Length: 347
Image (cartoon, rainbow, N blue to C red):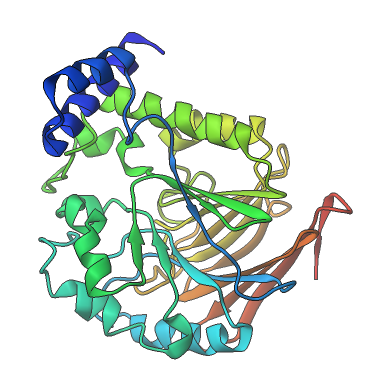
């Protein structure tokens, strides 16, 4: 553990001790040991399937929180329809949960206007596992992380970075916004809430260390990483250089099967020719960018759709099926990954 990482751990420990009103001798021990409930490792959540011997069915949507506008309500309707047909287990959100500037606090009506009162279908009354996007960081970050929101709607689960153990698959949710240099050096007219992130270098080094360790320890058949920002994308934002440089080498070394993101307001599937990692963009939850596409190797680019929609995953021990849908429920693209055959094949 380097000096910056140690300093970060000490600061986090002291803050935790003070918040919990830990007695001074205990605080000293924790500080000396450099351990803390919030920094020792990524928190792991457990999803216990309710359907024995059945595939795990998941909806994935991103970049959605616009109070029903920009076709958010239409996407929500189709999600509900597909969710019912597939009897989904849970929903994954790839971030930018509330536009334009996150939540102002735990009592911000946008939580109801963009989430609770939009995703009302019976099939969507399952747990939503959320990561933060850059727009979320422009508001009160702690509000989205607060258990008060979960009290308001029990579906809501949001943390900066965490692991979801769903049996045959483990999802590793990674907080990608702090990786972007320009959010710190050239934020333009935006204000970001960096509480809990500073000092930044220590936060990022600690996060990368934790993700690498967690992936290395995982015994899951499938390993999928979820973040808001792109790593590989032909969309408006393109590749997020900082995430590509710092996180991608870990994903390659740890044999990750797929990276799921939002940020680019499109639906997209890229298969990296070098590593075989599948890069899946599900950022079509509301506003989309028509015709905004960059040149890309057509052998790698399996789908680029510049409209609204969402994605589903169906996972078993030996197979993972990926399907992209538009706002009319039309299937845009399907793909199947096989563990037994150790290759991917279009279907």
